[in-house]
Image (cartoon, rainbow, N blue to C red):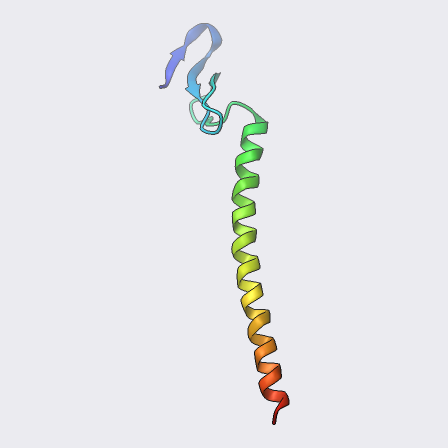
Length: 72
């Protein structure tokens, strides 16, 4: 819900992270820097998990190749 609140010179919004109401500019989606940081940290953690899974697979393949190559 985005209603203009003239005496606050902002829009009535709801935070996407904590669902708390706040007043802010039209394109603001989080009520505070804390909520914004929590969302960004969650996204970064998911990205790191994908990267670690990929790196783990590469290391596993490298070990397999080393063991196979050492037999020759």
